[in-house]
Image (cartoon, rainbow, N blue to C red):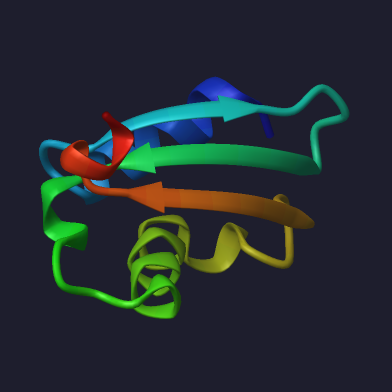
Length: 76
């Protein structure tokens, strides 16, 4: 697994989202995801939205994903 694939999956699964994904070892990643759809949602709900775009890869090909999820307004 690589960061670019994860970025593509997130941005495809959350239309209008922008994702910045980092990770060098192929199993541990960090991502900052900026998306209008996060407005009015608690952090847990936002994370679930991102996890849903990755499906079965979570816990498999992606061992760990640290997330920062913000709206465009929160991103500044």
